[in-house]
Length: 109
Image (cartoon, rainbow, N blue to C red; front, side, top):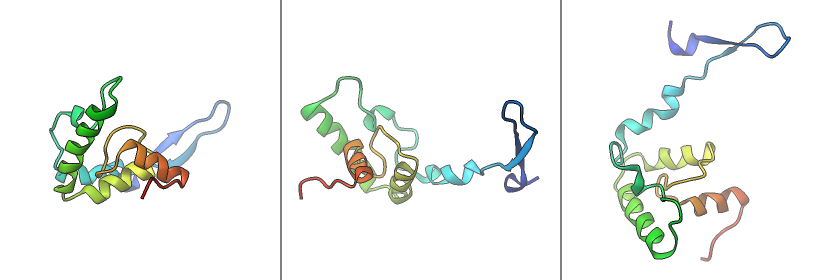
């Protein structure tokens, strides 16, 4: 049966079984196949504990350079926005940039 037609059965405590369509997650993540970062060490895109200042900015710029050359940076960035990824550089956007856009705040221009 195609993934789109599959159903999952959910059951709340004490309620009868209900059927809800399964979400085809493969489609949500399909862009990753063509990602320039595929197979790279995630430490390029995600900060280690306590990273601040120049070290953080340099790591973020290295990640952004990879994203600039990536054929799927658009879908990657949209994924991070829609699913509110709190950490890491996604589609060339930093954690701070995404948080500001969620809050409707713009940085210095």
